[in-house]
Length: 457
Picture 1 (cartoon, rainbow, N blue to C red):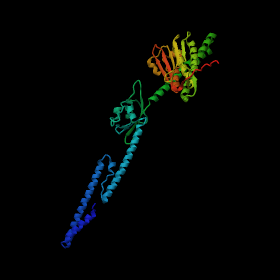
Picture 2: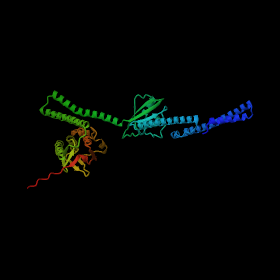
Picture 3: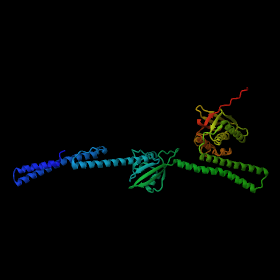
């Protein structure tokens, strides 16, 4: 690259030489002036050329969508323009690096909000959606692409939410139905708005359906326990007051005492079932190292079923017990007996006098074991089947109390089955009887080889 100072000096020499030919001072000055002007003009032209190259590069850099690529292709310029271009390139490179780091942090932040179990919606000062994560799209039915810049009030039309946003008091949350809520499967959302920046808002949503359901179940549980205990307590209190105030004959006194014993036994059974449920929920899962024979469990169930049948039905029931192939099952004996006994005694309670209750144990082809109780009772309507394992849920409350049921038996069966990795199946039709079965996994079931009789020598 030709040095501009050399060109400028050459112009001065040429101009001075032209003036020297006139051999006058004025001519020499005039020549030097011409040389100076020409040199300055050449200097300006060269600088303009370099400036144009630098400007073209900067314009290309400004218009390019990938500035990091252009930052390394600065033009090669001499002197001070080369230093300007190099410093500009370094500044652009630092700017691009900062931009990429900021973009990476932003992407990580958005990814974290995308992974949040809560719905996140960013609203501008006018209440329009700037961004929302996938969970918020599910909660409110948003389209993350289409609904950007849509006003939140146009998409969430629940009156409680509109009143909440209009009041502007965001110290507490508001509970509204979710977009997927139906009468059969209600969905409840807790929505809380937080202000930030210049009138911007952060909206957080959380699915509290399970919490609301658990709270409702807790209230129902407390109410049911109170009701179940209040009835026998009322009876006991009345009988005690009668015995204390009235002179009764021995037959009447004996009858009242028998009824009192019956009610106290009912409360004792209820308390035992509640303690059993509490123990099942609070204890660790059973291991698979303690094995017991199925025949022993079935023998206990049969003994209890026949005793209950003799009390409830003077003519009894037809009870059939099939122990199937000799087998063992791994688990907690008291829990397994409680589950099996509950199914058997329920069948006896709800089967009419003279009806058939068949209990069987079967080894399935895939190695699992099935404990089945089938009866010829009145059957169960389809709408009741999903709720049978709820605590205190009864199809016929008066019938259950007459037969001594507490409403907790199937809840205990469900918990025992879950703790042993088993599956509780219920099949029933009105007028066709019911079939309850527990299918145990193959890891907890094994066949026992029968002992061969010793041969005489």
